Amino acid sequence: MTHVVKTRPRSVHWRLAVIEFQTTIGDIQKQMNENYEKNNKLREENIELASKLKNLIEQYELREQVRILDCWELIATFIVPKQNGSYLVHWSTLLSQVDHLHKQISCNLNSFTKLNLFNHHQEW
Image: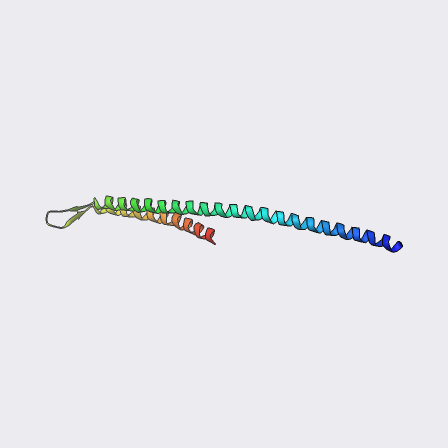
């Protein structure tokens, strides 16, 4: 009879350990599923944000191309054709416009490069 009494507490202890192990495994699986769902939502959000950023960059590039064309048209107004086929150039005004255009393009190129680096970093 002593033998039966000793085995009962061990079997009860074993059952409790198994129940606790199963509970812990269940909690881990639940937490993994929650993290998986959160990760999927974040991935979708990142894809949406990357798409919006790409559209923004494309709009920015297009706007800059139009601005550059406008500047060149403005510069062309300082080159006046003459009757004999040559051109009269208002050099001081033309050079100041070219300098202004160069500064504007450099500034915009720096901004665009930073945006592109940011975009490539997001893809990594």
